[in-house]
Length: 99
Ligand code: FES
Image 1: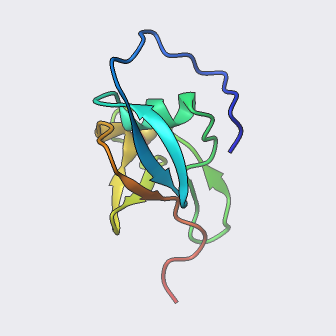
Image 2: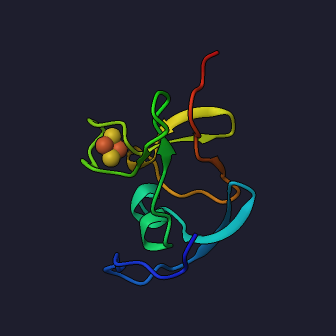
């Protein structure tokens, strides 16, 4: 994941907390929107489609498109509908999920 990003935070967070993204630690602003925070941290692809494996990233930021799906503590969730909490264990779904 590149450290640079075209996304810029509009405010300075009070507290950065550690989260894991595919086993790599990132420091994200506690309580801020998870999808926006990941984008600002340089995460460009949130998942791959089950059929073609094409990369996807947040599009609507309001819970409609599901392109921000990530797995958090073993459950697939929409990152745009969550806030950053300390210790989140995030995995980006890759390719087919069903055999
Ligand atoms: S960005 Fe569309 S559902 Fe999250």
